[in-house]
Length: 325
Image (cartoon, rainbow, N blue to C red):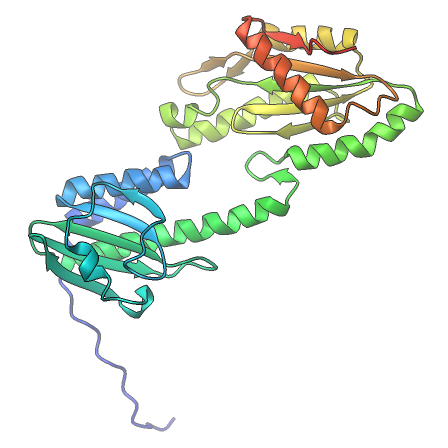
């Protein structure tokens, strides 16, 4: 090996990070992970940071510092005079850290690039100057937020073209709709009816907030397992939202499905977590008779959903669509 005379640039000297900063970072990340949605977790984390540092903040997505119309989180109105300062910076990513003093406030602006999106900007301001440790903490926090936003964007792009709900491994509505349309010609040929069942489990989505993230995941798994046991293995199941499911039952006429719905709703959804939770189950049903071209998949979904809503208003555990033949 020959020494070609290249030397690494000296590393910047920064203040050592205190245990308080590590603790605040851990608490902020815990807020992000425990929230049911990324945007709610980010808002909770920034609220905790604002309280700890005595600062206000604005999280936005834009290419220029002065254009913060897409606000992701804002704790207070921007002080007068800030806008003139921000207009001095054309492209956000040309600047690593921006500090300025205006309207008796010490302002700090940091930014992070996001894949296939506008950069993220985090503008913070307070009455006292920013220390080197606080600046490094804000930069680190924004890096985590940018990573979360990046993954969320990729996740949404995957979901747009997917026919499955990734968290439950069930079909989504587009996947179930495709499966229904594939099966209906065979049912018509064999002169068989079928039923679309919309199941609502109130309180399922709230378990994450009341019992924690792990309990919420376990509750979803147990709920899906109970729904699978209530139907045949060949029937199709989809997850429409956090606590809404759709079940497509081949060959199920109104009389058989009425008995099935009565058995399913009789005992609700018992969830074995600590402490145990017993959730109710409400069902709306719509039967499709053989050779009925008017009842498309979208029409069946609409009418079964209407039956569910009417049944809940009437305080009934299950109800058929009032327009069912």
